[in-house]
Every structure is written in structure tokens, then in C-alpha cells.
Image (tube, rainbow, N blue to C red; front, top):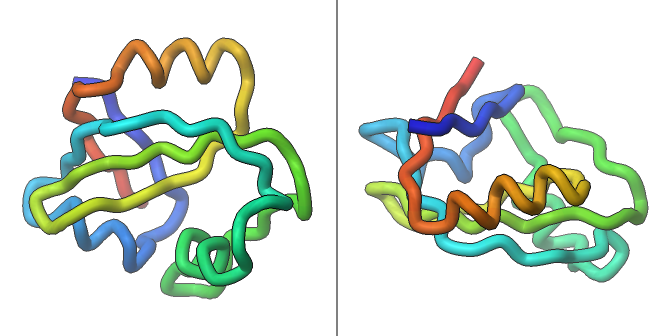
Length: 98
């Protein structure tokens, strides 16, 4: 099973409980500057503060479905990463927390 790693315990990841898994539903190409401040706040807030993202840039919005609901995550977009995640749509991932 592939895994996706997170550097902090984000509230959004409660949707991966109790199994710490999520199925990749979609890969959406986004520009950070086009995302709402409310979404960025939701996506980057963790128990110790916020994960700092650049003000702009090409990213992928990965949508996962866990046992407790849907959760997103943003990842920097590169051709290699995009190919990898697109090839994994529909697969279950282990959600790796610190």
C-alpha cells in the first residue's frame, strides 16, 4: 500500500481515522494564488500552528476519502509527482503521521 506522509497532525486528518488510511479520489492541478484564504487556512493548520506555503505556485490538490470523510492535501506539482499520483487514483494510501 502506498503511503502519504504528513509532517504534523492536522485536524483534517481525523477523516483518516480509525484506520489511518484514505483512498485517493482525484488529483486537481491548482495555483496557490487562486485558492481562497479560508481553504488555505483549513488545509495548513495543525496542532502547533500553520504549515507555511509560498504565496503562489503550481500545486496539486489531492482529494482522499477516509473512513471518517473526505480530506484534501496540497503537494507541489512536478511532472513526476503528477504522473505518480494520477497513476494511484482509486488506490488506498496509508496516512503516515509523525
